[in-house]
Length: 231
Image (cartoon, rainbow, N blue to C red):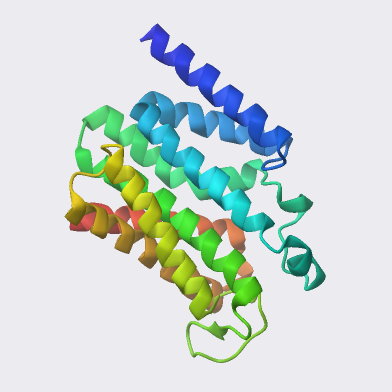
């Protein structure tokens, strides 16, 4: 047990330092990410941490995609795309809760729900970042009215396709790492992750003042709950 704790601390600390060094997260993001990452590593071992790292690295790469263009239109992530602690907790709290529940119960659907939650976070990032560049004139999810890029609740065909791809990638990663039991379950996880982003868009469109962090929590939590209900 002591060796597991040491491995979790060292691995997560090293990743947090590297993420900060390469500009993926700010100082608070590195600290918040370390806390979440260590908890996930302790509960799900290296497979869980690998899925988390895939989301962090992939999400950062998507944020940097066309960053100057997004900056010129006022839709770019602040702080040069560096994520803060509030971003880390908003995107990963539901996943961390699923990991903890899995460690306490050894109930396999919680591991799948963990993957679904991170899949939703990754898909939401993909939809937002890709849609802002290639979405041209996105539409509001509630009434399909054309709105400017970056509008809360806006969706686009390129962004939606990117979200589906991101959700599928995380689901397949979970499958290959043994966190998801079978191809059918992986399809459920990918679908739950994508539907989590739909919930995010609806809340953003109907209640834009709720804020990005709150909708991220709703997105990931909805995905985890859907996976648990279906599996």
